[in-house]
Amino acid sequence: MHIRNYSDKFGKFSILLLLLISACTAGGATEAPPTEAPPTEVPSIKVGMLFPGSTTDAGFSQAGFFGLQRAEEELGVETFIRESVEVPDQQEAFRDLAAQDLDLIIGFGSFTQDAALEVASEFPDIQFVIIFGTVTAENVAAMRLDQVAASFLAGVFAGLTTETGQVAWLAGIQFPSSLQAEVGFKAGVEYVNPDVTVTAAYSGNMFDVAAAKEATLAAVDAGADIIYFMYNEGTPGVFAAAEEREFALLNNASRFGECEANENYVASTIAAVPPVVFAAVESFVNGTLDASGTSIVGLANSDAIGFEICPAGDASLASQIDEVKAAIISGEIDLPE
Image 1 (spheres, helix red, strand yellow):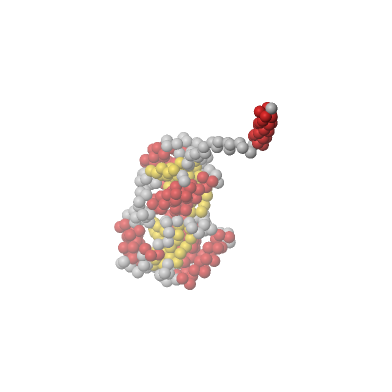
Image 2 (tube, rainbow, N blue to C red):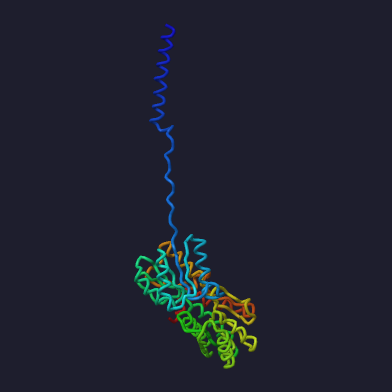
């Protein structure tokens, strides 16, 4: 009897326990969390860039390379480069980059755009961007700094400070950026002082130190007391001329203001190349790039473009320069093309 009663009680207890387990299971309280699938690794965007010059030239090409490096570090893109590629070899170099299954290919400088246009038509699924380009196509965009606006400010400064009534614009060769700078500089001088004479000369080479020196001396000997210039490795020639003649220098900087580089600098146009390259990659990554249009980085982007008065220059003109800058940004001043 005792055993039977015990069994009955045990049976009832077992049934109750099973019911409790069933209820808990039905409620999901004791379910193990579902196994999460391992995260899918998103492949990095591949970006290639072709440079006509060396990425260690301490000038234009290296400035562009800095922008690509920043994109690699901050945006996580994978980068591929071809450097020191002369014009006859650029199509082959672009095809070599395209064969790497890239998402974006950048041609650095207007000298690369003819080859880029040709190769881009063969790879319609790859986006091409020409930095400082002047032409576009279905999958070829252009992005450049507003050299006209920045150089307009240089012209204003020169027109207000010249004592001889004659200033000069010097560069190695005529290409879109140098021609835009010339146009802007002349317009800025005329805006504040139409009586000033502006001469322009191109020495024939961006890298020839002797030619840059000769062109600078010729301009100064003709009466110019302010020289606004754009050279790459030819810049030391301008500095050498400054050791032999007395004149003021306005620098068109490719990376940043360089007031400390020479005691004759009175001011510097800041036309920073790295932010333009970075903007091209960033807009592609974000999906905001105009795939077949032209994007212009203007004075509103103070990291990329602007004007700096050096310690040797007339700091009292800063507010006047700022007023002109604001008028350009607002559209009050209509710049030439």
